[in-house]
Image 1: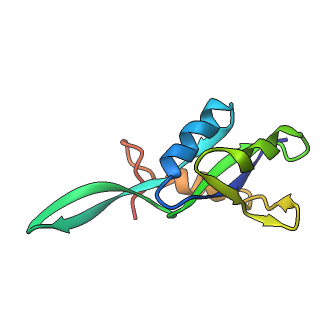
Image 2 (image 1 turned 90 degrees about the vertical axis):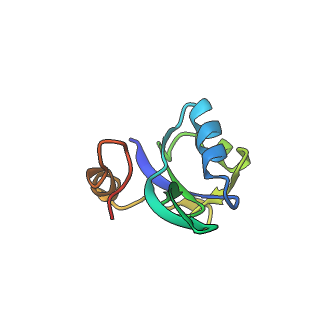
Amino acid sequence: MKHWFVVYTQPRNEDLASEHLGRQGFDVYFPRYRKARSHARRIDIVSSPLFARYIFVAFDAMSVGWRSIRSTRGVIDLVRNGNDPIPVPEGTIEEIKAREDENGFVVL
């Protein structure tokens, strides 16, 4: 049975890790929000990670294939307790997805 788990990524490499995990066939969720950034007297609205350096991946912890996540480009490790990855509590991902607007950005 698939559960969601948290992946700790390299700094500013959430996109890279998401892309490579997706290529390996994992279900990846990378929540983002719109952020106002000011630079040189100009304000831009940019896409920013909801949880910097963290993305979510769904897999069956009983299968052996999940161990390849740790050697994926852009990934440092899974959030674990000892050797076992810690699943995200039921309903958490669904609650975050429920807050997304029509463009896929989480509304804060």
